[in-house]
Length: 347
Ligand code: NAD
Ligand code: UDP
Ligand code: UDP
Image 1 (cartoon, rainbow, N blue to C red):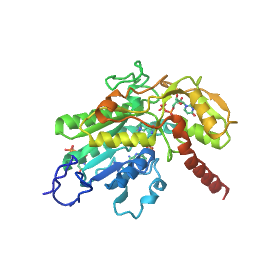
Image 2: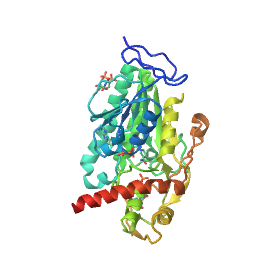
Image 3: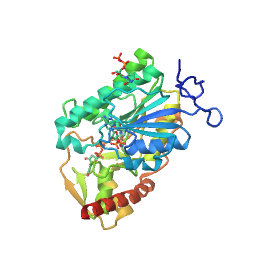
Image 4: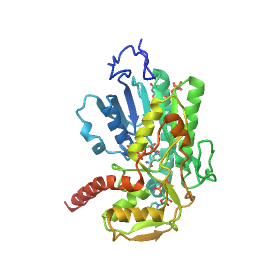
């Protein structure tokens, strides 16, 4: 019978018949759930570039085929339309579990459907991927979030902090969904010996971000391109730390291939108020851009900044790209997509 390697250097037998790639590393077969989304599509590019075989599972809830279209026809790549809430049988070495309805916009328009979708995806989806990992002996990585810290009373946030989440708040479905997914991962690790990895991702931006999912960087960039005022919520003095997507993807791969379970904060410690962010967008895209104040959402965290000493020490990872360097790298992609959208509407 087949046994599947979960480390980089173990021999692999059986059905898959992997071939060695370079010295000391075998070709991996890797699943990326949510691989048609923003972060997933960049991760898939990196894995394919280093010679892995990649299977993407995505239900296209917020993801788009366009993000992966350049890989169609590549024999090392496979895209399966699949909802992770349903079980699936695959033979793989590693599972990057990103699938999650991530967009804050959906909270407001259809809160009941959104919470059901969050709860089911984070519980059933994570359970299925952990069950798969257990069956085939694959390593499992969860993309959790800085939102597990809630409106933090510790600043910056360390992984040892248990968080300050309001269980009955407007955004709780996201926070609590991810907290549950972390719990399930650790339960499968302790109870079934599954090799797990947990990343707590802080606000990330870059090309392929959803245009209209309501996150602050995509909102400001799209608004500046469309010559609309940038919408600053509240007094704009709340802070966030913004990470460029290639830094995150490097961190995820270092975590998956390394020997530490985590959780690890993956984020850029550079901290900005929303007003400062609007200034950077203005400098980058349009010096005549303006801002407009809007009421803030309830329970909005006042500040957020990762303490990344653990990832620096144990994963030898730290972000390389500052906000001022990273923002210009997403503008071309946004301009093109906004142009396509406008042309689509005009037709
Ligand atoms: P995204 O919305 O672009 O990607 C999520 C992907 O999951 C989409 O392609 C979507 O279609 C897919 N998906 C959703 N539900 C699914 C289901 N039931 N079955 C199969 N596929 C499903 O979001 P992203 O920013 O790329 O986020 C990726 C992961 O990183 C998510 O788990 C998110 O919670 C986490 N994260 C992201 C950030 C960030 O700033 N981008 C911060 C913290 C955590
Ligand atoms: N699962 C899956 N693919 C697999 C193995 C399991 O989708 O290759 C699903 C399975 O359907 C179940 C979940 O993962 O719903 C948890 O599996 P596990 O074996 O841990 O639990 P059990 O099936 O014993 O309840
Ligand atoms: N925000 C804003 N204008 C927008 C969208 C968001 O000022 O158009 C603020 C929001 O209130 C929050 C911060 O930007 O304080 C980050 O919001 P986002 O939804 O991007 O991420 P998260 O709250 O999950 O960190």
